[in-house]
Length: 168
Image (cartoon, rainbow, N blue to C red; front, side):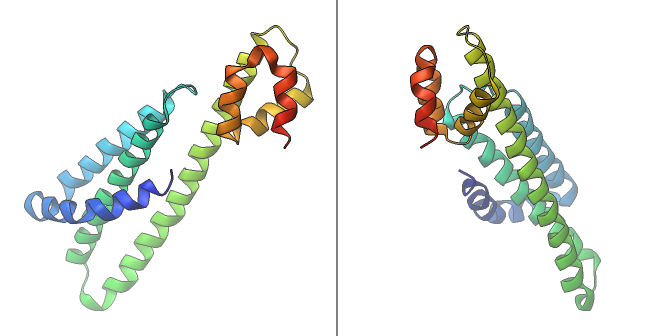
């Protein structure tokens, strides 16, 4: 699903360039902040049992926000630097963004994984069974394998039969 983000960056850039030329960098950057805020709010309040389409929507919003900000700030930088310093300025700006984006994507995936694991532990505890370190480890593995996690959630009452399947 992460591939959706760069596709949205690429597809949104021409539209954003037109908006940037018409309105300027500041209003377009505010638009990027709005898309980012929507993506963050959806990600924070996304229950682990929600549809995959909501996750896809988050990646789409994040990709659009990223594309908007890339285009708007790149255009603003291009207007403020002379030609001989432009490549250094753009390289530094995009390098910093890519480092920041990598950190935030890793953080987002880690937080989502933690929420899914907590959801699985809570759901398991509702079956009345004890959460041993082995069970928690297996639930953690399930959080990394959405196809198996879905099966586990559907069959929590038969968890002793399902958990060994996750080791495969």
